[in-house]
Amino acid sequence: MDNSIIKGKWNEMKGKLKQKYADLTDDDLLYVEGKENELWGRIQQKVGHTKDEIMKDFNSETDTDKRNIEGNTKNSF
View 1 (spheres, rainbow, N blue to C red):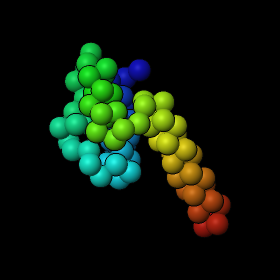
View 2: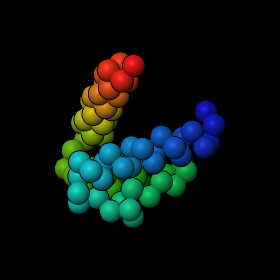
View 3: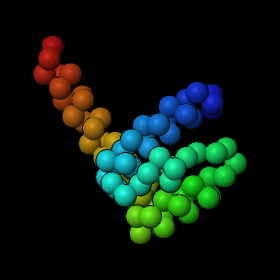
View 4: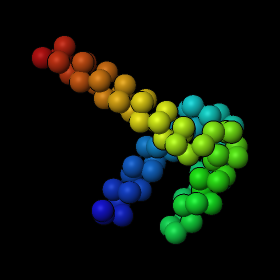
C-alpha cells in the first residue's frame, strides 16, 4: 500500500479516536513506522479498552458515516 494512503487513513482514524476519547493527545497518537505496538499500548492504556474494542468502535462509526454520506448523496440528486 502507498505510504501516503497509510498516512491518510491514519489521520482519519486519529481524528475519530480523538473525538471519541477526549483524553488522547497528539503525543499519544504519534505514529512511528515500525512501532505500532507501542502506539497501541499508549492508546489502550489511556482509554482502558483493547485494540479489538477500539477497532470495532472505529469500524462501526466509519460504517455509520458512510451510510450517512450515501444517504445524503441519494437525496441530493
